[in-house]
Length: 271
Image (cartoon, rainbow, N blue to C red):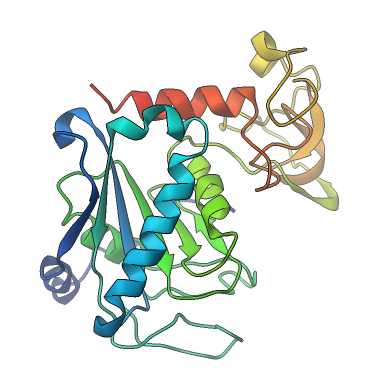
């Protein structure tokens, strides 16, 4: 799920100092950051004795991301850094149920905005820790939880580190934070209020002219590219390019448009 950009106060001096003490582990180094895509993984809710578990969760996420198009095309040009973020307590807020509060470095928790699966955090704190890496082109924040959930911020993606589906969630959320793609799922009985969305994969035009060059072409997520009603959380008055892509169903691949957008976003940072 996409999280809109929100105004947030800069990290306090204490938070910046805490971030500055974090160590960085190299999961993959393919070359100088100036000419590579730098993915930074940060953790929340992992205590000092759980740094091994954090690395295990981080490596698993990267392995799944790297095996999925179009990331697999650029695997050899991506640096992957793990920032060892130490929390005072293990776990995240509102897990396994609402009302549970834990003292963690990034303030991560479920039930963000009243949505159970939405896993939010302090974006500024996550950015402060990620900044310890040699370069930052994308941030994946993993929470010490086995509960299904995640979120896509403009600057980062969040996932539950120990959930079996969290690798797919990470790829979906990176669609938001790296590619600027919209969610393509919707709630039944809702109608889009109007106004053309800025995201490349949703439109109010029932002809789908926004992606005219793709219309009628076969797409990896099945079927053909067209204009299918429903997307960006609304059932009516808005259209998506394919029936069931990754931005609607995490078990599907990107559609042709999503692949192009992500390919361009990744390759533009590689020189």
